[in-house]
Length: 117
Length: 111
Image (cartoon, rainbow over all chains, first blue to last red; front, side):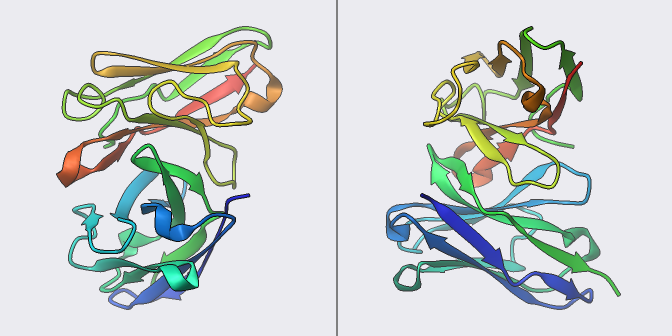
């Protein structure tokens, strides 16, 4: 069974940093592209970033480009999202997702990031 | 404003059928056969219901079906059940720069 468990969320001040982790089990992480997607309070889903199987290729939404970095450690079965220069508008639940057909497929339960002073 | 346009809400009675539309452009929905649909209950993670426009993952009832015509994708749900009441989101591949776009979501109410 595919399982994805996010962690690392919390309360951070504007301008601060956080690193999210996504622990994968039930499948071989190194075989799949992975995504991060976020959902603001009461809002819809917004794609954030994706990474290819070996980490050599990454893509970002314009809203996070230059501030967020996606990475992975296939040996540790873990996906990461390093978030710097956080803004109030980055407040959201962040989901990691395994790729199915070039798009997010199987999702974790999410971790809440709150950016507030 | 979301890249893909969905109706804010749809409704139907138990046993009836509903269809949710998802309109994009030739740069996303119309340009690729990579459209997915997700069901999200309050406070829960999204669940994949349809991928590659019309394929159903294992375990998803065949009451759920997907299709596409031009720049518009559709999710159809037949034999509505109370547990189908949820938010539904469409998603499309949009090329190597924009990559992935979502619709704004549709709230399905089972009357």
